[in-house]
Length: 175
Image 1: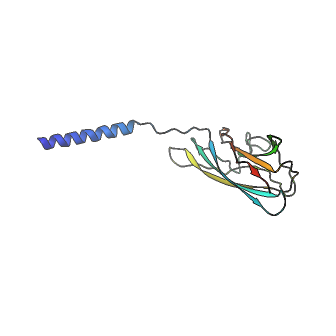
Image 2: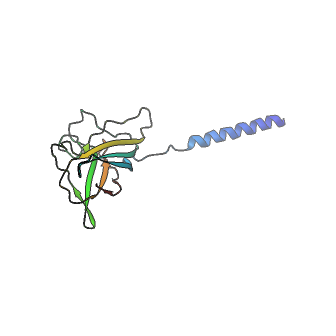
Image 3: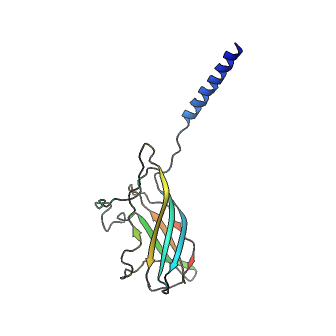
């Protein structure tokens, strides 16, 4: 009789544990992408103020709709639209006490610009939440330079046109 009571108690405890575990809600991640600045590496190729920069950021997106395909060219992703690109890099130079955004000139050394179309990143299954890292590089070829003290700000858009938070690089001194 005592053994049957112990088995019943263990069974009841196990059932309660399963019940409470199944009642917990799955964690929810915001459908608005969140990014975190990871690193920047400045690569000087020997030409004064002609630098390459390699960046790494991490991302989290609750509905897994980061990236654009080659065929995403109709509105709102059409050329000329702010949503044509989904990763933006803004460049700042320190003028006096403040940092001022400077648009990169399009020269024969820098014809692409610093805005990118990331490839589609999705997952299979019910949970569409995604996270990971993105690495990319830019080249700044011998532009007019107003300051040797610079920084970058980066943000992304997802396919639902949600803008992420804006992250900032550390302040860099160009060589």
